[in-house]
Length: 321
Ligand SMILES: Cc1cc2nc3c(=O)[nH]c(=O)nc-3n(C[C@H](O)[C@H](O)[C@H](O)COP(=O)(O)OP(=O)(O)OC[C@H]3O[C@@H](n4cnc5c(N)ncnc54)[C@H](O)[C@@H]3O)c2cc1C
View (cartoon, rainbow, N blue to C red):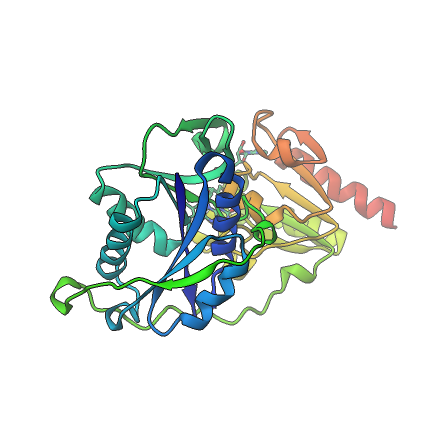
């Protein structure tokens, strides 16, 4: 048996999640055997050779002028050709925007589903864990027959544990015609410069949808001010435009590692949790005692944030006076 890990790169370097996906592959080595990697693009030989020391048996180099820019057609056709040749039992993608765009297409070509957002794997019984209902339930998906396609959630596997060893780069000939590529790639999206560096903050007060209205933000702002903390938020708060995007914490926001992280009215979805894993102490305030955030919290208050937060702010002010 074997595993194929599909790598992703941009602006001349590997996306960190590629190494997390390799790490998932390494964890499954006992169950699925050798780990191979696929590097797709054009003029990426140098990049591909960097991966050889991550415990892979081989890095397949899929180069073609039509793969210079990402397109779902080009990438899925190239990967399909490699898969038909090497017939892996398991294919692992990092759960990035790009992989979400074309991985289902590749899976469909083989008449298989994509088991997305995997947060843990169990080689003993060949199962993959993914969350349901905003993290309230974990489901175990069992491998039955290959090829099986999974994507791994950001931060769920440690990139540094990708293993070692010395594999080799092996060019794989891809045949593509311009007529097969139906979309025209635009220049890649560039993120705006960040003016808030949440990573430098010792204390962060982060607010979630539990705050209900933009007008209510004042109570968390007061708490942040009393603590001398930075204000941050879960994604829906930034999506609503209530706080700027640069204050978003999580897999598509900033990764933070403060001494204390207050999660106020935040449920604790995996995409949020991966951004706060490095926090020394997590304090959660949530009215739902079953909210997943409490599994990660060091201290928790079950109750109404509209009562707890102002009372806490008052006590902090008193203690500081
Ligand atoms: C590809 C992708 C990327 C994502 N990236 C991110 C990311 O970077 N960051 C991120 O945060 N999310 C991200 N998400 C979204 C994520 O899945 C969750 O939807 C989001 O984190 C939920 O935000 P929340 O906890 O504020 O809201 P909810 O899940 O709605 O939780 C609100 C919480 O407030 C509590 N509450 C309600 N009223 C009160 C009250 N009066 N007092 C106390 N508690 C109360 C509720 O019990 C609930 O637990 C991403 C999702 C996807 C698909």
